[in-house]
Image (cartoon, rainbow, N blue to C red; front, side, top):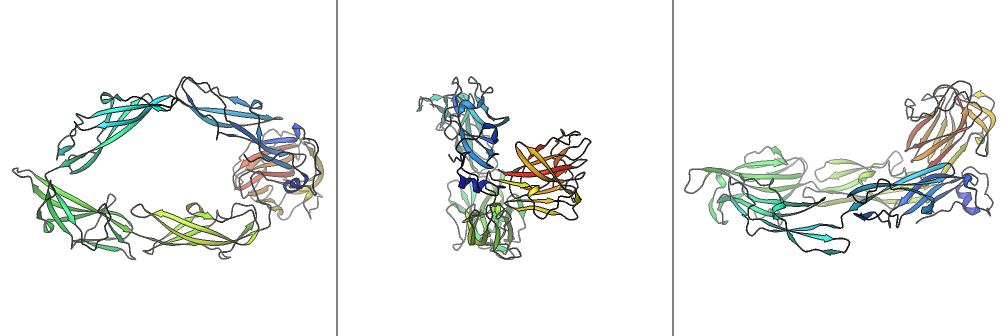
Amino acid sequence: MKKLKALLAAALACVFALSLAGCVPEQTEAPAADELVLSLVEVDTTNAKTEFFVGEQFSTEGLVVTRSGRNLTQETVFYQEEVPLDECTIDSSAFKSDTVGEYVITVSYTLGEVTKSDEYTVSVVRPVRPYRLILDESGAKKMFGIGEEFSSDGLKATAFDYDYSAQKELEPYDVTASISVDSSAYNAEVAGSYEIVVSYTKDETTIQASYNVSVKIGAGLDIVLPEDAVVDANGAMSVDLQKGGTTVDFGDWVVNQVNANGDVDKVVTKDITFEVYNAATPVAVNGTSFTATEGGAYNVWAVLEGYQLPDSEETFTLKSFVIIYVMDSLKSITFNADASGTLVTQPAGSDIISKTWTFTATYSSGATKQLTAEDVVIEGLTTTAVTAAGVANISYTEPNAKGDSMSANTTVNYTITEGQGVPGGSIVTLKVGELEGVAYDNVASNTDVIGIDTDGVKITFLKEGKFRDGTAEYEGVTYTNCYNTAGQVKADKKAIKIELHADATITVICQAAGDGARNFNFYSSDAETALTNNANVQNDRTTVYAYSYSAVAGTYYAGANTGGFSVFAIIVEFN
């Protein structure tokens, strides 16, 4: 398990420290518990016991719990540090050892005044459960005439249980009287082979098996394709889709009427009509041909009306079909370059680079399809290391008309520049008092002031806010100077605009800037919808608060619902 201890050597502390001017001297003593802030608790069930037999008591055997957070004194992070189980609270109250089912177990851990939780699921199962079903259809009817009702009379079934606690199969037993027979696939009006599905249920477990029956009417049709036709082992024919469409001609097909033994009674080609379907959609037939304008599986039916059973006046319609796969082959994929061409640039550590990539797939018919980064496989993309000549290999795979895979590949050139980035757990801290070129003299800002635009976060102080001098202390840290939002949040003023390149938690250190009830909230990307309701600031101009919001990548606004707030610092902690 990956572990990053909370106490780091001085060199590593320099890497993680996001706002210190220099390295922190190596500590010889562990930080006090109240100097550590807990961000996340996770359970790892890789080696944990998650399945219990009925009657077996719950156990945390093999369970691993880790904590993640930050050290306020050293401004470092600790990541997936293992926690002894006896320091955790395990809530297994939902678990019922005498009842089969799934149960959620909650694991909680407290550090200081912060408690975080995670969940995992366990199941209670029977040690002995049905394992396999064997059918004996030797006494059952498997051949039916046209129009004859299906029957499973004579079918026998045997079940085997498996003892999972002893790891052995038990003696078989007859379940014929308890089986369920699903014959919904059977069609007495159409000659063919049909699968009959048999099920047996014991307690909460169902097992299945199947067998095939046939419907015969004493005669049928046999389609003979030309010798130059491309036909697979199942008798399906394939043709390529061309630009403008592909015409399939039946003019040189031969259709025979055959008896139940498969012997040819006579050639009926001249008496046949053809029907074509793409899935369930009819396709127009022009005499002895049709035109496919898109790829897919087409069913071509040969239809003979008025077949008369021997020694009977009853007539039927005989049908037989051939599947024709019209293959629109994937020829290539190309990267949709932006204005800078195929050279894509971003700071190291950000994961946004490939998320914005798009591609165009081109097919043999000339058709195209637009793809996103989620549709393709990207290999060779490394966003953590600086490089001037990175090459990412892109592959795209999709099924053709037959369901077989077809693929195409391309490459994308990219550049990674210097930048700390947003690896999991990193923290970006912006102290307003450390902004360069800002006069903290109570003068309103005439234009937007960019506080930070790096490391996966962009923060903009919007116009009509005021930069003020002053000090504030929060959890032992002294902050100098602030930005006063000076009133109600608007999309273009009196707020702080925060743009995230990745999922993170935003924390704002602030206090009310004047008298009167007011709330500090986080707002949606249009500054119209309040995403939080931090309503505990009421006429309090002296207490410093830390308000947090867990956000996905996107744009947010932070500020007041009415009067202004003095903002001293913004901390962004990436997940």
